[in-house]
Length: 148
Image (tube, rainbow, N blue to C red; front, side):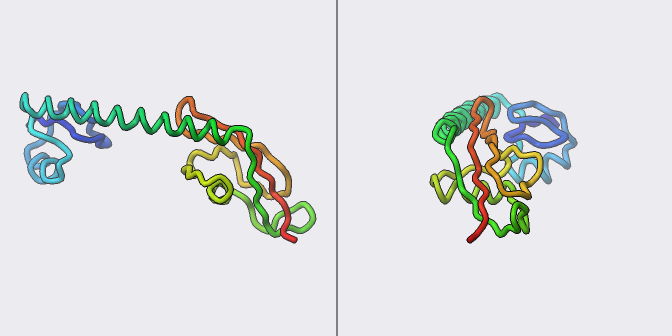
């Protein structure tokens, strides 16, 4: 049975692709969950409209992330942690950096955007790159200071 996918499905295809699947898979899984439509002329028009809406949504999201990147670029955040001289008792990773950005700048960013090789385990002021979207990157300075 030929169907048109309404969403990206791993090991099957992407939005708008026409794929050949077994009838049982289509009737029992794809069609009831509205992941696909039977391949007809009307369905192709509907999928094309969905694809355009999705492209516009993604473009708006990228533009917003670029604005966030411009806002954050060159800024700094301060994280206080328990430490013994230069060494932290724990570590400072992406969740703590995201929380600090939200607390100080009121901007929500995903943890996956924080590009660090490993959590920081010492006091200091490392630069952290935030990869928000393709073409939307920012570098911030993270001040890791000891609790007093």
